[in-house]
Length: 203
Figure 1 (cartoon, rainbow, N blue to C red):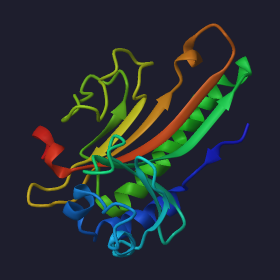
Figure 2: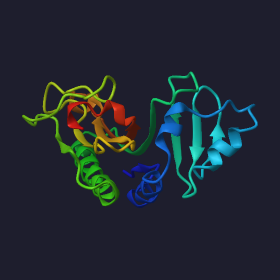
Figure 3: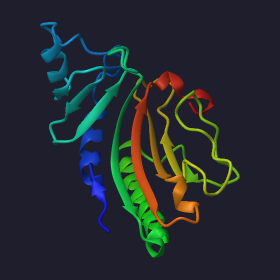
Figure 4: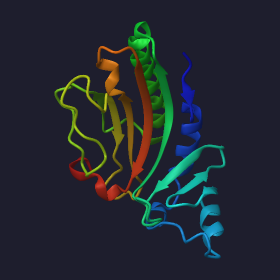
């Protein structure tokens, strides 16, 4: 087994250090259309190079990592900036526990990477924890109904009330078939950045 790493913890740390300083209200407002003369300039002001321009914009940062500016296929406004970072799968029954454990270990590395830039998380834990929080806004996550539910692991960082920076959400998910009798397991880690207005009661 070998995990597919789309973005390493070190690369995430570098990107987040850049993200700390950018104009987030402009990001959430969304980019000009690709045919607009200001489109390339809009991307360049953040140090991004546009990669795909169908439905939602995908950009390459100066550190070589890819992020999606999700606008539900409407181009703008941007509702979240997100990226899948890590995944591991197996079809072997004996490797199922290893897949889940490897996902937890990798998620913990990503938590440390985010914390080095964003500080300690507002909450961090796993499915089944008694204090597992409700999502402060629709679509961030669904509260798992068991210790094997998703998000299997969750950490999130909420900016201060006066800050326009994003809410950062880091999730490890485990494929539902992992817990079924058939052989096989899957685990993945994803990060999303959401508008600070969605901080809810955690702000």
